[in-house]
Image 1: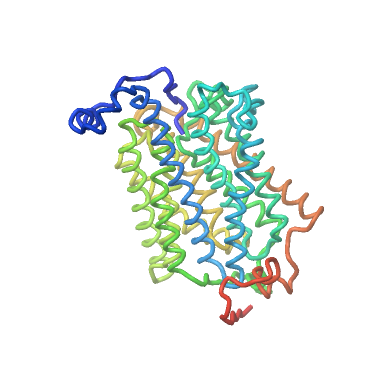
Image 2: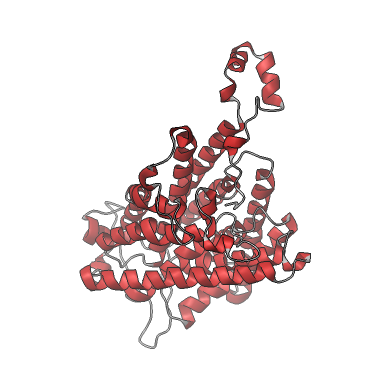
Length: 453
């Protein structure tokens, strides 16, 4: 999200340019709109563009659900779908009453202290505020749903409800204020403390790394799935049950990302084309790099790694999508695609942390890479473009801050919930699958699900 968000209320114009103005003169029905100039303002163009982008980002939730469901086992598919519904069902409510104010309210550079439930917003500002709230709420849901993938197939549903509420209501909004507070209220400390502002245009760190590091904390506290590691600690593959479904999810996410990144302008202007181009180029490069690296390492071009490579490229370009050239976007995607393969292997085999969908690597690690990439490739201030170390130094601070905050608060949250109400289902329930044990029904009714542990 741009930290130089223009106050569109001060930039009214009398009519939209170009083809729209011509259409108003040629089509009699549309010409009536000339009597209502308030319909033809930059304000309304911004509202329309931001709303469309928010709808695209909301559709990404379906993509996350498909990816997580496809990469895990059939016996817990329904539980995964329920968690993704929960992220919106409960997450949007708590973000309305609490999270939005903490993230964008006035008060201090550390957290907002106003605008809870949009209270105090002037009537004249409400049309934009409704749209801006909706756009931000779907970002909050994205941060929460990343967590569910890292702790899939062994976590109590009731406990996850509380995790989602804490993430969307407190953890994500407070750190979001540090980098994006000036979009609506007071500037956050990462925006105002240093000689150059922290750069994270659409959320490589604010959204993705926060979600990824929370997933890391959750996976550590809840522990690996039964059968993931043998008695010697050697990792064993637990294949996902529906790779085509996961592939559909990746394509949905790629599609929705054109709302995530270009929509973060929150302004209908000429910059959105470059942002969309950079976004897609990085995704394409990420998929190719992951394909190549997995082919070299495993002897075959791995399907799940290639899909995660696309997502890695998308996450990596999210921070610098508006501030780099297309050639740089390709390089950023290539690094992200290679990095995600190596990171998944390292976390799985060396750290012995069970992350069923690669959430930590895709979102945490590649989100950090994308944030650092701003300091390297930004055309204004990037190290490779003659900008020196100032921007890169701020980016390093930002990466460290978001890791400490998200991983630290994640460890506290998961540990407290584990002690208070339990975090993990019983061994018997896990073996049966969470669909039966947690929800009393099956995602694939009528099919006998056999699982070899």
